[in-house]
Length: 635
Ligand code: ATP
Ligand code: MG
Image 1 (cartoon, protein in one colour):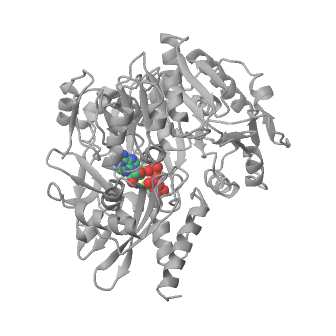
Image 2 (cartoon, rainbow, N blue to C red):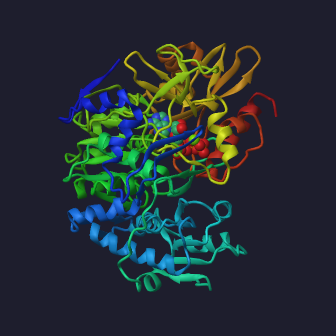
Image 3 (cartoon, rainbow, N blue to C red):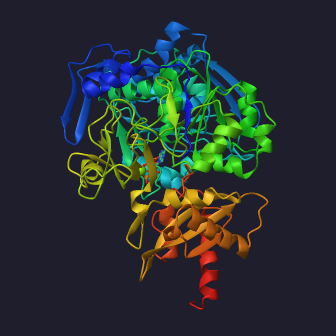
């Protein structure tokens, strides 16, 4: 198997040693790196399944993200923002702090108090970061909704969180058009009396109508005092509610606290990204997802880092856009997703190759298992075999990374397709249905054995669901819902969602194994597989394959791909049916939604598609299946 030893000159073995000795003491030592106005008296209160970290301690997320950096160097650049239309802005830590204080004062003026919820529905502009931090400054709970969501999705979430204020903009930019955010909000909140005010940022100059509840950011917020003390809050004071991506079903309202969450984010940001004063960090995630919360907002800012923030599509108006951004700002650290990488790969090497990527020193990925072939492309074509790749496994619920290579503290052996080992202080296991640890190199369910600082507090307003979803399959272990394997070196291989596991002739197969088999063929850009009931085998495999640009779909290629799977994975993984499609159904966060494929292939009702990105992909698959049924004479 391929592996690559690569280091960045860091070697601190004391971190793992301390974590192995005493997990809780270890996290206490990490919490010391934050600012606390009062020290905690108890590191962990664990009333399973509810954990409270650093009890009695008082702190504030916005103070840690801004005031700390401003005290060190107010002129340090915090955000290098670029819009899709080419416009740009630079904000220093001091600029951010003033703007956050103004908005915090505005929220107070609107009657927002500690513990109240504020919904944020903004494009990727600096004001989005400012909004989160303004809420945090006064102890309001922010709840960000990705700016691609529809009115109904916003309405459901706003009703669930009972937000009193919404922050939005006159529009956002994507693929050359303006997204009508304000109109969507108007529709979403019609008749909802508990919403008192809507703050509207003028960003695109798009014509909109202002209603009685509306306040213009540029007038109302900008007229406020630029000073506002950060309110020191209990360590477990809720910082935010964030709804999960909805890959497996209806999104869940994950509630995170303050001190534990920040400790986990702070430590992992350093260990994973090896952040240095001179770095220019670029995370392509939207703040509408947890990656944006932890590793665009809180992680980088708590470390006083400089980062690029981009509003728009990464391949607009040229497939080279992302590489141009990296070259323009001399980006040193890039953190993106397998789905984005597959898209870049699909359009060909000439785009990265014609840009100067020499500033890059570290690459990262998150969100889905990364296919080994895609990993290698990232390593060679983008990183020129010099940059470690951090494949970070974590979830909205875990708050911060749980499994990842850590070039910030150790020299590492990277294995393409593995997220490497659990981070210090995190106890991961792979178990069978009875909760028994499976032998090395065997497949099973990923669990977390001990509470960890970034762990969710609960699901908003629904402790029972929290218990059922995460703590009912196993009594004292957190059930992550992912299928995995740990090898002899302790490296974890994520094999796909537990719900999507295929059982063919008594063998369990993770979707990621088979899909990566397809992606390792030179003609394939991406693939999704799902199982359908089969009389003899239990389940048979249906594959949906997207080809790289310029490749013609032929019957011969279908045969070649099946042969390729039989050779690389084994006859057991051979699909009974294979379809070429142009697109796969994905969530708005870019993840393949296999539950939809399964529902379509089994002719089931498709439940909750609110998080689906593009309905056309579903129609395409439906029509491919209809064609097949027609050919088989079944319709
Ligand atoms: P929902 O819980 O609503 O179905 P979701 O699980 O997609 O949505 P997120 O919390 O955004 O919502 O995603 C976490 C999931 O993403 C993980 O459980 C895992 O399946 C997948 N994932 C994230 N990072 C990785 C990674 N590095 N390797 C493999 N899978 C990953
Ligand atoms: Mg999930």
